[in-house]
Amino acid sequence: AQSVTQPDIHITVSEGASLELRCNYSYGATPYLFWYVQSPGQGLQLLLKYFSGDTLVQGIKGFEAEFKRSQSSFNLRKPSVHWSDAAEYFCAVGSYNNNDMRFGAGTRLTVKP
Amino acid sequence: GAVVSQHPSRVICKSGTSVKIECRSLDFQATTMFWYRQFPKQSLMLMATSNEGSKATYEQGVEKDKFLINHASLTLSTLTVTSAHPEDSSFYICSAKGGGGLNTEAFFGQGTRLTVV
Image (cartoon, rainbow over all chains, first blue to last red; front, top):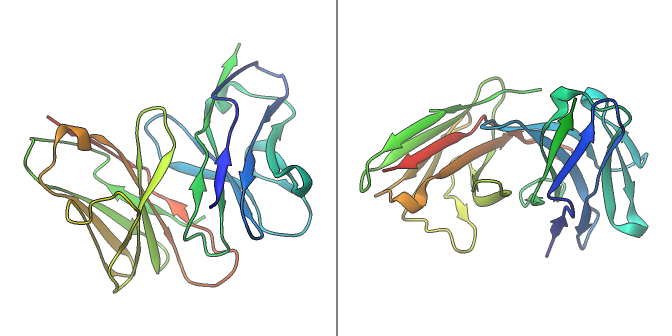
């Protein structure tokens, strides 16, 4: 069965510092991987996705993620965090038709001034 | 990206009553819609998947008679929580995707905060 693990429940970084959020997945076939961001009381916004091709994918808001098959990881990075990036971040894995998308537990990001 | 509108954003209902949540795709035809439930500070749990014109497929442990899902058109799916109880209080989120084969993205609604008193 597919699953997603986000090892860090909560991360605090200073504004301007770099960020890396970890995501590990378990999936029997070719994984389709996603990162979403959720602000309090809101739905989810897609940051980026990986289906195939270049393993380093660029997303919105300056985020990027790298797919590493050997490590079953899809970590999210941003070189310089802004205060507005404070939110909950979810990694998800699914099949090509997304009908069985599974989410990780989420990582809450706090940004210090 | 495409827009999915969820209504209402917040609802308070009395225990024992039913409440309906709507999920609309505003600018595309949603062949498949998904309903999720999110407990405070937790992840999204898939409740059910519905395809337009077909019965919804429920995840294990989700009571289909309690959480009625209707996907009667390509732009609207509804989730009705019947005989709601306080333990049904949660954040419910829908997502929708169109046809189109590979790489079809699912778009999320803004969520509905249900409080049962």
